[in-house]
Length: 201
Length: 200
Image 1 (cartoon, rainbow over the protein chains, first blue to last red):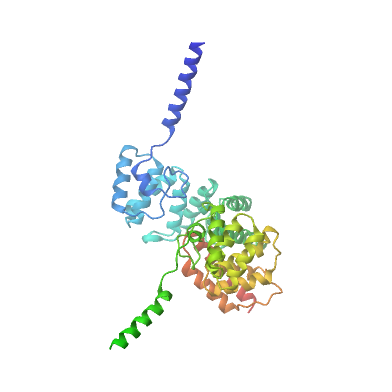
Image 2 (image 1 turned 90 degrees about the vertical axis):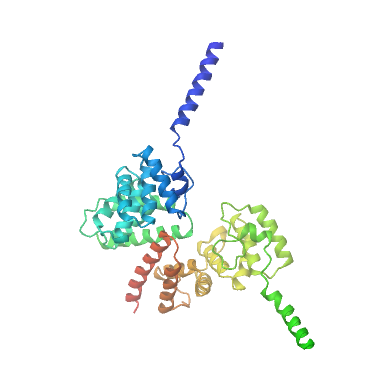
């Protein structure tokens, strides 16, 4: 009996410690640069990064230890972009987007779409990034993709999402919408997209 | 000279109350809305509001100052979030009639959705939102054209003409804060441009 109890205690201990080991460590980069809407984040998130230099230093130091971490790469890209260091920011955002970060996919698509800070506008790249992000469930991409389809802003690109997929994005966006403006936005997009579908049948 | 000093002192004392900031009550601390231009304390979101405490603080504040539209709106808000429409509505009505742009929008929103069994009255919503939008409330400046374009105020006297509605949207564009608000305004502007062409 004693042996069984000891085995159970050891088993519980090892489950707890392995669960602890799986929890990603919250770094200084996370505390200073996490985006509140990034599902990868492990800290509460900030809308504005206050001290760019400190945040860049923290993220660079963290990445030296863990260079393939897409969350940290996105965060370094985020703060470098805010700091107008566009050429340095883009490779980190590209890395994170390619590694599957839905936040990086949306943000990279957005800054290319807006041609911010001298970037080249590439609608088909935005289409591809937002398609991936929307498929992963990012609200911003789920609303922006149908908006751009309706306004022919992806004209000339291979549209990867068909109307059924777009309906799905809007349904999922409806379930996620937080607050009056997001709800009104989804409602407006949904009714406009229904009209768009019947007009383009 | 002495008389002049007395007169100046009396005048200063007379005008001071008007210049003094309003007292921040417990009701303000517990029930202010972040987007209410009348607010004198940081806003409290619905999810973080202690509804019971807010109701009792606001009841006490309103008992002392029953004609204060800000406090009446906040009391109405605390009841509305608690699903108590019977208690919420008279306070929201009071605040809206007293010119609170936040109350005008929210009351219109409740009536528009027929929330809590409140009767849907599109023309009442039109009236409340046009007043709120004219005072600059972003929510009304976007919701009014949204409803016009969709014919949701059909049969009502439409108080804002197309030029004024364009002004609402231009005003909303300047105020839009985050990505979603900007996207919403841009969509409404696109819709409204089509509506104007059709209704010229």
